[in-house]
Length: 332
Image (cartoon, rainbow, N blue to C red; front, side, top):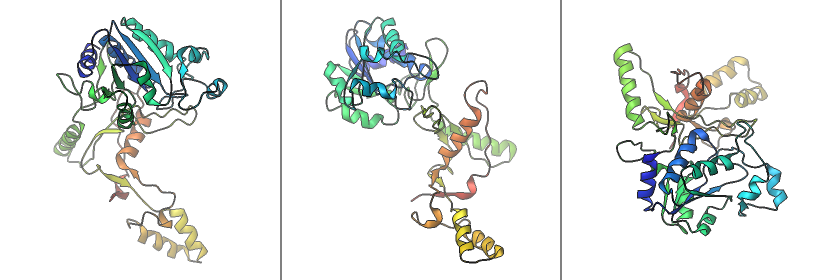
């Protein structure tokens, strides 16, 4: 927390009594509570202005019921005040946390004043005369920063915090998690090099050629809650070179088989057609590939591994995936 406070203050050139904005944070104790604490600790005699998106954060955590915004007559760029939001008395449907109160309490706990509002237009935070802004969203951070710089040029993203210094990751505090006390566990740094070293040691020790992925959150959206699990900036922080830039491609077996049947072909002829098409490259818009959108290999395998392992009592096991490399292609 102290490192975050010092870097936020230095990089935004803030004083202890400055007013700083926090734009589009996700709703997460694990992912953001200590980051917010560090930002508030940067201005213990000042004020922290938090702008949430609504009705959900970037990854689908719900802050308000859908119909509540309509009942207020609020639309995309309209501001919902803290008082209006609290009147909904809404808690996260899974954790039961009231994130507006939680984040306000975290800020006040560091001595700073707290102001929270909801609006989907990022430039509205400039109306609060903030001296600097921490762009706190994950996947659209560069786009958001580009927009906010038109009104508050003094802006940084989470990737700019703890990206240098004695404790660092090239991802900054993106992808960080709660650790012990007031400490964060940063995303793995130089993970490509680590993946290559693991691969080398497996070959050396076991005489087996494997590809290695150091994975984070899977790219999975829970159909029952609408929450998108990818709170990390990427699915895979590190991969061995054979996987980088490759996609899992293929053709639609069912379409080919149905077409062959319609043409009156026999089973041996259909099997021969399928065998001939295996490993072939098709035009991106060909009918043979309809319904088989190519996916990045690292995204597929990392998502599968994360779904299998989770992050609870399964700890962080080694997940072995087989059968994925036969249909990979490098996309032009």
